[in-house]
Length: 147
Image (cartoon, rainbow, N blue to C red; front, side, top):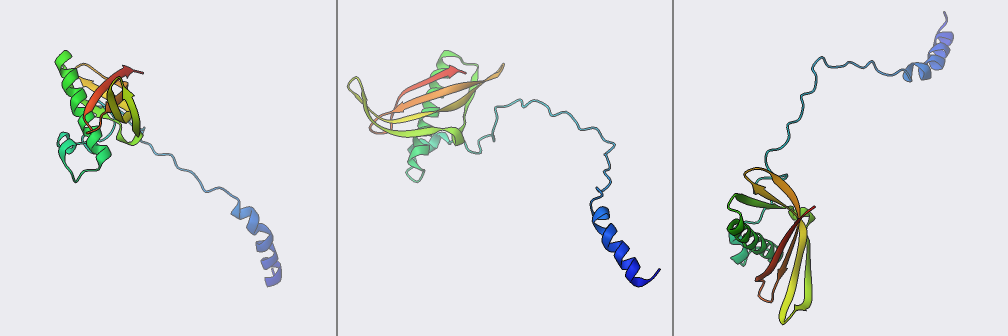
């Protein structure tokens, strides 16, 4: 073959060769099943407010209120059901709002709403979480309801 003819064949065959998919190899190892988590979702304490954060001036005011709500709610829940071990609050999905309202004669200055998991010795359940705070960021009311 002559050089121009070989070059022409390569140029014409090039796009067809370039469109050939690369051979796929399948691994011989079967994927292992993912076990169900034994603890609530999210990092253990990673983004959870430390109970002491409620009283620390160097902590973001929103996180101070979340920490106070969590501590108050946990204390009240443990009084009614000692099997409750902890509450995991989905920090990233919280709605934290300022309010200028009254509940009776009591000023409501903050509303916190989101998802929370109440960790019991038997199971963890997803709940909606509501917390109202007052003028001095004191917890006025906490409420949980199952989804």
